Amino acid sequence: MEKDTATVAVEPAGSSPAGSSPAGSSPAGEQAAGQAGKKPKRSPEWWMENKKRYAMMPNGIVFIPAGGREGVAFSRALLDLNRHVKKLNSSAIFGDILEIKKKHDEITRLKDGIWEEIRDIIPRFHAFDAKNWQELNENMEERLRLVQRRLACAIAPTDDNVAAIAVAVKVLSEKFFEYQAKSDFGKIQKVAGLLKRIREDIEAITKNSVKKPA
Image (cartoon, rainbow, N blue to C red):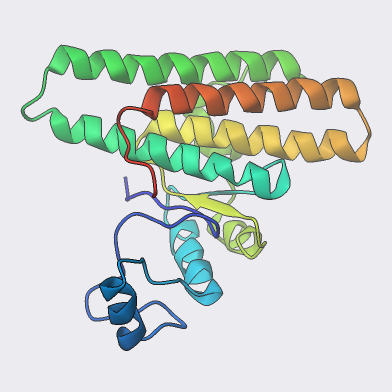
């Protein structure tokens, strides 16, 4: 699958393509920022184009996180999980295969546990198999419409486990907004509690693997 990405609020991994600068910036400005030891500031136009690029990918997933700006932290967690899986896959060449498999199994258990709880909370998913996550993803046209939202998050998952977890966060966020509109506080509490646990579990898995932004 394609490489990972972040959201409007998160600096993505990597740099701009060779010979180009982010929209709204200049080579001189980037050079000055580099000399000052700071990352060049990305313009809103750059972030939007970045999100659109990932929304257009075949495996791209776009969602509006529950919790407003605080919910955007989920994008960081998913991005870190994506990087963690990439690192595991890269280390398979010279690493301990059994240890790598053990860490992949940990992510699989997390994914299975999340969807088991979703089936309990949301009846329509009672018979849903997480390996069919693409059935819940929008087509490219709808993703491009959704990504226009200011807080929209976009990610291109590394593998099906990351994709199923990202779609789970998408489903739960959508249900959170639905229950919020109905003032169904019992269900809001269940969904919010599960979202919090997902984030904590992802951070526990990636804490020693992914370098955090300064």
